[in-house]
Image (cartoon, rainbow, N blue to C red; front, side, top):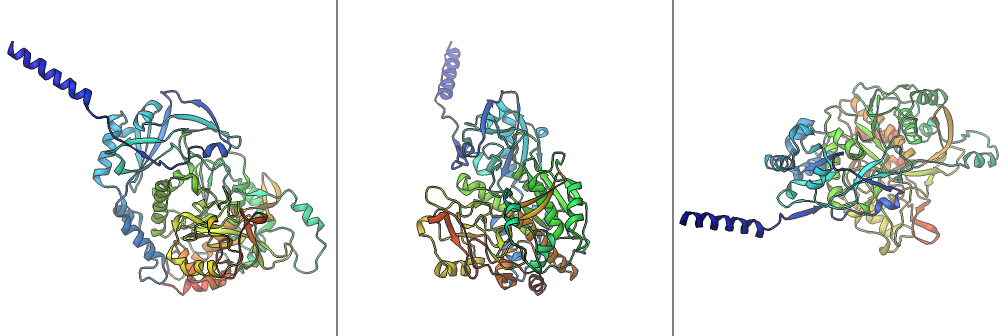
Length: 572
């Protein structure tokens, strides 16, 4: 009888403990992400996912030794450093940053508790990203608060799956995760780096009276080669490679590329085919893809080129993140990457952007060059403040702005074009490589806006610029004039940097890698652009004005190829 009473008492105490146990503490990740940004971008929320439908989530595991990574990044990128150009192999990078055993075991145990097995997941060589397939019910149980819907956009044929609510993870798990991809971030369909076609380009040309001498109607490769003194130089080194990154159903056409080079590639040797195509390329060719491929292969002529297409293998995956992960999962990748993709900085969580910056550092220590279009909204404007873009505002990439010819019908000087994205980050501090030139601009530049419009202590961008309007392309076998945007200037600069790399390779030197310390130390190797302005919030819809030296519309100016080569060869 006594034993029975003891058992009953023990059972009662156990039940009381269960009932009074504290619920598991949760921590929200990406808590400052703008949950309403998708509405302004034209997305339409459709049906709620059923519990059994598949979702793919990408877990960004915490990395080790980030201070060492950043220190090495600056050392190998600075021509004044004794470590300049001593880049890491992917295996050495993996040893430096791969997650700790505690992190991997914590994440794997958490997943298993929700029925997600190792066989449901794939990792990458650096071990810092894990992508897992699971049911929607499992995903919403795993990420408390998330509610997954399909969203559709008129510019895309496929929907995407995203959550309309913030997500949380157990407090014991949060120290091991930066974010979970495939939950909050929408593809930048209306990205301000998307090229546009000027419908009035031909009309404007017809109004121009005939001019004697060297006249060009629109911009094509030989015009750019003449302006930037590339002449007939082409790449020759066997290890040289370059790439264009494409997202969101942007495909290129091999026949368009051949026709373009037949029309405008007669003055220089060139390759007519891509060296490699990664990802989907089965749709109708797009303006963006045609522009990028045709101009990087014309300026970086004879340099084998990859077309890196990332459309998202599943509705819940993020194309931009997938591309970065793929870079980390390949031992051999091109040295120079031209990328036209950006989001509004104020819509993204800082933790997310910081982790993306780490991915840029990982690329830089391997000797890779990332060139990002600065955007086509000028300085941007929201609630009487300028609106910077990301990754354009990242201190760890090279951002390319846009210019136009002073005389659009001759190879002349340039002025800052009004669409050129530029300004100052509201998140990232000014990096040391641009301290002097930015301070000089803020002290001496013309028409500096009031401090209430921008963060004077922020990272200034762009870093470099090039012609960005009146481009000819071939798209779906049709010549298209008047294409414009920093999506035009970016592959132009990328091709030129590939040729600078080629000159270094010929002398047994390393790739340039992260460019900015080199560019700012050799501003004299560029054409200074001192007139024009970009769009913004001020009177007359103006933003920042170009000036002598660096400015937040054209950076340090446009490239002068022979001088850049000379500067690059003077370094170790």
